[in-house]
Amino acid sequence: MAELTWISRGRTRRSTRTVRLTASAVVVVAVALAVLIVPPLVQLDEQAVDLANKLQPPSPAHPFGTDDVGRDLLLRCVYGLRISLLVGLVAALVATVIGTAVGAAAAAFGGWTDRVVMRIVDAFSSVPHLLLGIFIVAMFRPGVWPVIVSVALTHWLSTARIVRSEVLSLRARPFVDAAISGGASRRRVIVRHLLPAVLPQAGLAAVLMVPHAMWHESALSFLGLGLPSHQASLGNLVQTARSSLLAGDWWPTLFPGLLLIVPTLAIAGLAGAWRERINPRRRSELML
Amino acid sequence: MLELHAVTAGYDRRSPVFQDASLTVAPGEAVGLLGPSGCGKSTLARVAALLHRPDAGRVTLDGTEVRGWRHRAPRALRTSVGVVFQQPRMSADPRLRLRDLIAEPLRATGRRAEADGRVAELAPAVGLTGDLLARRPHEVSDGQLQRACLARALALRPRWLICDEMTAMLDASTTAALVAAVETYRRGEGAGLLAVGHDRVLLERWCDRTLDWENCARAPRVAD
Image (cartoon, rainbow over the protein chains, first blue to last red):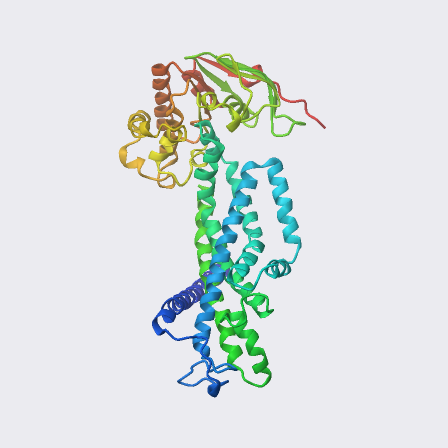
C-alpha cells in the first residue's frame, strides 16, 4: 500500500515537473526571440515621447499601454528586458568565472592559501550583498558597466564555496595521485583533471545566478542607483510607474513586474531541471 | 634500489598509521608485502610511490634520497615509479577515454608525439582491444579499466612498479592476465616490483620473496 502511494506520487511529481519544464522552456525561448528579434526588426524608438497619448490603458495600438509621457510600454518592456537580461547574463558569467577560479585555487593549493582566501570569502559574505552592491555602484557614474561590476563582485562567493568543496573531494581521489605519479604538474592536475570535473556545477551555478542578477539590477535601478533613469530597464520601468500606480494606473507597474518575475522563474526552472540531470549521474559515478 | 628506512607515516602526526617500516626492492626483483586490511600497507605503498610524505624516516631511489613529495618531487624521480591502485574506478579520470587515460603520462611529460605509438604497444600487452580504447571508464568493466590503469602505469617505462592490491577487485582470469602483463614488463625492462596485498597464495606465487607486515613495520603504540 505504502509502495503504491509512493509510486503514484512519483508519477504525479514527474508529470508536474514535465509541465513546469515545458512552460519554462517556452517562456525562455519566447523571451530570447523577443529581445533578439524585435528591436532590430521594428526599428522603433523606445524613447519616442507622445504627450497626447500619455497614460493610455492597454489597447490594440499599445498592448501594454503607455507611460506618463506617452511612450509605448510594450516596446519599453522589450528593451528593458533586453538590458536586464544582458546585465544578468554578463554579471552571472563574470561572477562564475571569479568564483570558479578562487574556489579551485583555494582547494587545489590548500594550506595557507585556502585559509586566507576562505576568510576573505567569509568577510565578504558577512556584509549584506545588496548593501555591498550599492557601495560599489555608488562609486561610479550610472551606467550598464557599474551595475554589472557591482552584481558580479557580490555574487561569486557561493560559487567559490561550491567549487572549492567539489575540488576538495575530487583532489582526494586516487586519479589525482595517478596523474601526479605520471609526471603531471600541479597546474596540469588543476586544468586537465579538476576544473573540467567541476564545470557542470559551475555552469549550473551560473544559470541559477542569472535570475538573481536580474533582480539585483532591478533593485539597484529601482533605488535610483543603477542604470540612468531614462534607459528602459525593468527596474527603471517599475520605479517610474510608482507615481502612476498611486493614481490608479496599474499597467505601467504590472507588465514590467510580470516580465521581471516570469522569465526569471522560467530560467530558474530550467536550471532546476539541469541540476536534477547532473546530480543523479554524479551519484552513480561515485557509487560505481 | 628502492629503499625505505625506518619510515613512520600516517595522516595525523600524533597518531601515525605505522612506525619504523623498512624494506628494500632490488632492480628486477619482485617483492610481495603481505598484511591484514587496515594495517597501513596502502599508506606504505603511497610513500614508496612518493605520493605521501612520511612523518619520519628516509626513502631512497637508486641512492638518491627523496626530499620532495607529490608534485614537489622531481619529475624524473616520481615518474620512475609506476603505481596501480586497488580501485580502478577511483583511479581513472571519469572523463578520459581509455586511449587518453593510457597516454596521459606521456602528454603530461611533454612526449605527446610518442603517445599513439606507445598506446598501440601497451594495449595488446595488457589485453585491451581497439574498440575498448575509445570508451570512457563508465562504459567498461572493472577488469578492463584496471588493465588500462596498468597500461598507464607502464606508459613511461618506470624502473619501479608498485601494485597496491591491484587484483583485489578482479576475478581469477583477469588477475592472472594482469600478473602476466606485469611479469612480461618486468622481464623486458628489468624493473623492480613491490606488490602489496593480503592474498598470500597469490603473492607467494607471483613474487621472488614475500614479507610479512609484522616483520617490516611496527604498529604504533596505542594511545589511550
